[in-house]
Amino acid sequence: MMAAATLISNARAMLVLAGMAFAVPAIADEANQITIYGEVAPRCWVAHPIKVTATNAMVQVTPARAICNQARPVLASEVRMIGSDGVLIKRGSATAERPVSFSTRTALEIVVTPQL
Amino acid sequence: MGFLRVLFLLALAVISVIASQHVHAQVTAYAVGQGAVNSVEVGVEVRASVLGRCGFATGGAPTGALDQADFDQRGFTKDFAIQLNCTGASRIAVSSANGGMANATTGGAGYQTKAPYNVALYVAADNGINASASCAAATLAAGGSCTFAGTAGTGTGLRLGGASTRANGSYLRVSAPAYAGTDTLAAGRYTDTLSITVSVSP
Image (cartoon, rainbow over all chains, first blue to last red):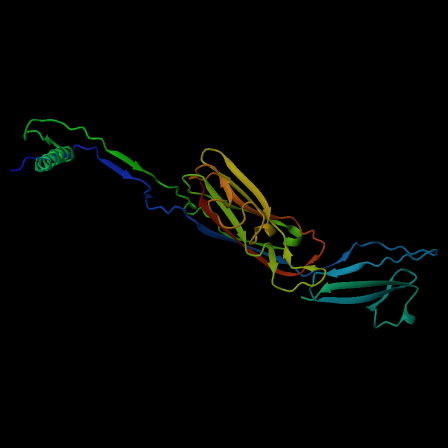
């Protein structure tokens, strides 16, 4: 039976495990994504709305601008004829009503809306 | 001459034997019962290095989506949590596909089809140090000037100078105030995609 001996070199054993990465890549890049959605609804609005007051001395006309955010706009104009007692006499399309039929007190309403 | 040659060869043989003994000299260590018990002292020098491990922790990657109606009027803000799993310093970078929220339709004079928004990063390490930065999405597109624009690398991205292996409150925030641009933002659906990458940093 051989002697159960361990033969060990008399030289110093040097075990160098240099530069060994333990199952991990040097640079671990991972890509992940975030998606951002947003909705801009079709709408129209009047830029810098103002109240116009007309006087006998001077009629101030500062045109207001109706803006739509590139939606298909629909434009409608309507006249409101008002009697001397202040009661609404008639309401109709501005283009259909003849100017001669306007009473002395008439209001004009312009409506701009996006076509949905 | 012959004597000298013999002498030279003899000397060479002696040196060889000595060298051989030095190299192959052995010490036998006996186990108990197998001889005189002795011991041999052996120095074993072990050197090993583990390079940095870095990535997103499981379930800690910033993913998901934000969908905001009427964002031009309401604006938006949302945080996406980040949990890193980096054993050392790291860098995190973000890139934007469109450099803003883009609408596929054609704009035209006086109309805008790309909406701006902001991206903010906050990352914290296990030891309490943190890093943060904020940029407009426009600077996150390819070649953008944001400090964390692009794909994370050893020199690219917001650097966090410490290990981060826990939930430390890191996040990516996307936000935008109500649109206030000069040109009207065209109606429609807008979208952008952010890609977030992380890397070890020397």
